[in-house]
Length: 336
Image 1 (cartoon, rainbow, N blue to C red):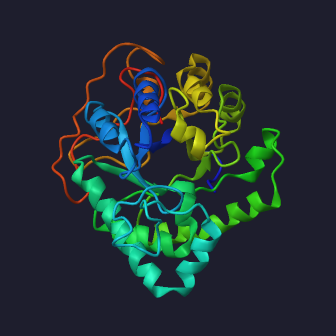
Image 2 (image 1 turned 120 degrees about the vertical axis):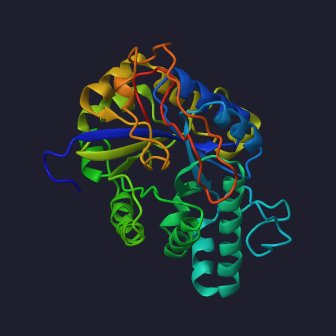
Image 3 (image 1 turned 180 degrees about the vertical axis):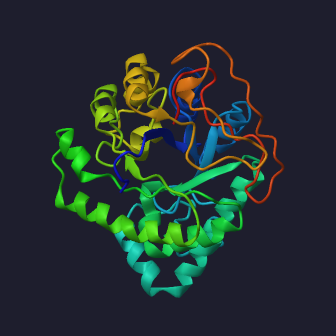
């Protein structure tokens, strides 16, 4: 929690970058024409190579690792992590069963550590600056996964982690009925926040996107904006330019094209920038860069076509480091 008087700041992040070309197209469009500043990359996703190509030509897009350990593709495959994935190298969707297994089966924890290291190494091999890390379906809320993400990520330059605490009071003020399960989850995030703080890493103060996952529409963003609490809030979304068979199978109820429309909506940009400083990312700057201005101060305002030229993601692979992880839109007036 932040004391009164702390300014409001907000960053918008797209998850599942690399899962599908439809997602990648939305990330690029939302970044260039809207308020999207960052994305979380699935390094083993079916469209990961396309995502990396797009990120390299978007010098101000900040990219983090979207660690996949449930209902998604692995890097190592069944031959190396046979107890974690199916014959196609995909993690199962049952988070509860996986979580229990991590506590009681040391062999699974060893395989888990190998896969987490492999995903960080795959990200490092892209040459992109590692802006942050989070996990698909927030699997890093599991104490074992969170610990391994932090310990292994540190060796690859990890300095910022999403702690998905969605304030129940804010949701209630937006008219959302907050369940006991949601309140318990918000309390449970304290463990991950302690892990992050002990490691000397950064995290947003608040995160929005759990209750409205797959449905972060323009109307909901407009309702949330005036109720943003003090401190840094991350709003994460799942945009796509269209629905394809993979997205329809994995996320049949998600309104991904509506989420893209929200990122491009000038009304949303205006209402957010009127109450908060819109930042390009929350993970800090590469050592070679100075402070970037908030997107709301860039030339032209929201949806401007004025170019904002930033340093390119040209760092060599390895260590998660890099030069030029810019985080804003090219000339737009908002950030994520």
